[in-house]
Structures are given as structure tokens and as C-alpha cells.
Amino acid sequence: LSPCTTPHTLNPSSPTFCIFFSNPSSLFFFIFSLYTYIYHIYIYKRIERPPVMGAYRSDDDYDYLFKVVLIGDSGVGKSNLLSRFTRNEFSLESKSTIGVEFATRSIRVDDKVVKAQIWDTAGQERYRAITSAYYRGAVGALLVYDVTRHVTFENVERWLKELRDHTDSSIVIMLVGNKADLRHLRAVSTEDAQAFAEKESTFFMETSALESMNVESAFTEVLTQIHRVVSRKALEVGDDPATLPKGQTINVGGKDDVSEVKKAGCCSA
Image (tube, rainbow, N blue to C red; front, top):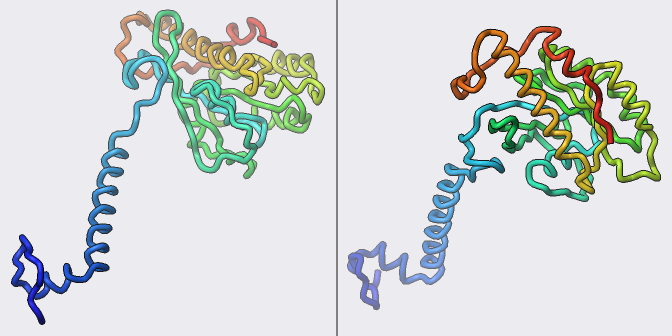
């Protein structure tokens, strides 16, 4: 082996070193590999510290955390309702979301910061059944149908039964008729939907994720009603809601806990 012809700072007398670095392709491969290694370390560190989600204060700065689920047939606009409320975004792409997805947003309700953790079925509804894990811990739900597709309204009763089979009887439910901006294609009347909501003791609103119509109101109403149930339950057991320690779990069960609230009237667009 011939010695290196150029000076090196790393043991230039080493034959292995000389062979490796005297070959331009080997040197390029070494530099590229080093760059790739450093880049992946950088990305890994970024993943370890994900950006904070939440639109009100810091992610941990809230008084209550409520899990809310979005249910309904595929293609009714659940994902766009979620993105409109949490990020004020709307996507014209109609492809179904793959995998489980949730987002968060915090709002102020009665001088308290309520953080909503909103879960999207993300395409699971195509399999006609949602796992019990999806419903577990939910205290609110938006049951969504498409006002331009009557079949999605017909399936609301099945969704409602499945929801009630897997959650506490006190869960706050909002029936949502989405895509109300498509007035010329309407297939479900407001009167029919409101009559169903009154019969089932749920709230009701018509929304348009595209035009951002009533999206804020629908989510806010659900979170407000959940907070009222929690506050009333705390008072019934002798606690002051204002002094409850952060993170305390409150049992909002009881068949008639929210019957009066739900029957107070439905909201419609």
C-alpha cells in the first residue's frame, strides 16, 4: 500500500485511513452518512418535544378536561368540524381520515378554563362499529349527519343507540346537521331533525364547516352543558366547584342528572 500523498490530522501513517480518504467516493459516503446521522438526531429531539396544542393558554393551564366524541356516517364532515373548531381550517379534500385522531382546544366557561379533547372516528365508522375504547370516558358527543344525504339522518338512531350503550346516561349529546350551506341540495328538513332531537332529549344545531356557521356555537354549547352538569353534581355532594382540586374526577352519572337541562329546548339554526 502506498502512503498518503496529502497530510492528514488523523494518523496519516495508517494504511486503512489512507485508503478510505484517498478515495473521493468513500469520502463523500462518509460525509453523507454523518450528515444523515446528525439530521435524524435533530428530528428525534424535535419529536421528544412536540409543540403544545391548545388555543387558550398553555397546555396544562386549565380547570377541567372534557372528552368529546364525534360520531356519524362517513363523509358527513366530522373531520372538518373538528379542524374548523380547533384550528379554524377547512379542507376541500373529501378523502376519509385514516387512523384515530383527536385535537384539543380550551375555552372559557363561567370563569373557568375548559379544555376539550375532541376525538374523531377517523374512518372507523365504515366498519359499522366503533370500539368501546373510543367512547370510554366521553362526557359529550356531537352526532353528525349530512343535510343533503337522508340516509345519514336515517342512521342517526343507530349511532345514538350505540353511543348510549357505551357511555354514561348523563352524556351531553348535540345532534348536528352539517353542510347546511348546500341549501339547494337539502334532503333533511330542519323540522324533522328538531323533532327527533326533542324526542331523544338531545340538543340540535345545523352547521356549515365550510362557512364556519354555528360550529363554534355547537361545540361551546356542549362544553357549557357538560360544565353545568359537573358543577351541579359537585354542589349536590357538598363541594364548592370553585375549590375543587385540578384534575379531580367527578362522577356525573345518574339517569336524571341532565334531563332538565336537555329538555330545556333544542338549538337550531
